Length: 382
Image (cartoon, rainbow, N blue to C red; front, side, top):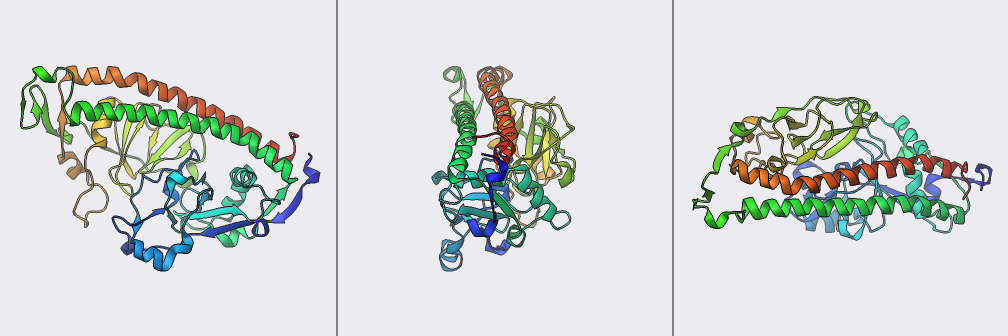
């Protein structure tokens, strides 16, 4: 196959795409139909529907928005904020409907355009550069269907498309397997924390006197007496597309930068947006101004798991985001240093294994991303 054997089409002629509706703040509810937005599509291409809590009433969805329901196999693209993040919907993500910051795609005719090839095209440097050239807006850049209608896609034969998709999906499958292994390791650490510090089934419990839920040698303290939540530092959107240092917002990693604000490890806590989200970075990182961070000197795996169990969301809806004074006033149960050290000794190897898998995935993604444009241009025959 060579680049000269490709046929060019207008994107709307071969691919279906649809933008989500512009939902308003007053439409959000505590349950009902889950709404996916750009925040749920992560920088690494995975989809996390648990990192936001946006729903609309089921009756409103049935009456007005059923045609915005997301289907299994849909390819979703972030079209606002951090542009160009691409992921695929699986059955585990459903049911979902879209918000205005997400556009979904699927092929119109699988004999002309393979879904796997469409997925590759949307991740290609060419497509990503084009949508950024179309982006409008100041602080919050976005693009939409009107821009997509101007894009053309070059298609080799359907057999060549499928071979290209198969090569790239082999990398994706390895990445996904590693991601699942990381999730299992983190769940094992979370379960150990719950067993020791929530259910209080810690080593030596049978010989420890417990009064009002506080074991002897442990203390209930305000967070502010244990650790300081520091303010993150603003970083312009256009500066989050360079380098290898992860940039953390309240939804997790929202980009990368050439410099680190802090050495790892460190803890990140959502201040605006996804209030009360908690993340761990075992490498140097940059926390932006929508989060607090715990300095590396004060960070520990015990504290990370402890903060994940703190109910940071305030019932005072007049307070925007997470007020630091309020957060510092919340109490946590601080065990004896001996128990904390025992916990660290058990979970540290789990996190070390996760770090190795994360590094492996970074190398797999880099190799895949080098191959992708060369395969699609015909530079590498398939």
